[in-house]
Length: 89
Image (cartoon, rainbow, N blue to C red):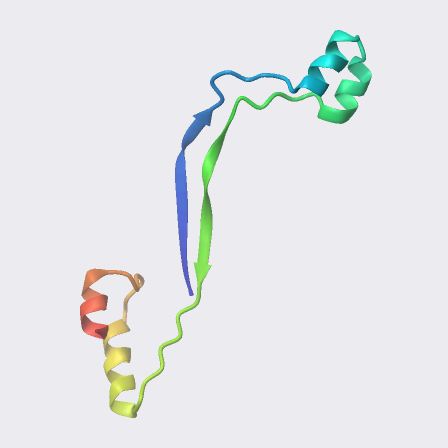
């Protein structure tokens, strides 16, 4: 199994604006309805990124090929390293 994590920097909302529906509730003084629908927190931005998980399955045609792959991968923690790619290729 392999996994990768992508972490991007914080992305801030430069010009936050209430939607028309939310603004009309505030201007009408219906703050309790506003809080019920939209909550009591303000989001000014978000950290972006994600996780990827994958499974490698290596099939070999014979015992010699299996041993070559075993030898190439022995002691390795990174299947994507250039050294391993060359050996497995």
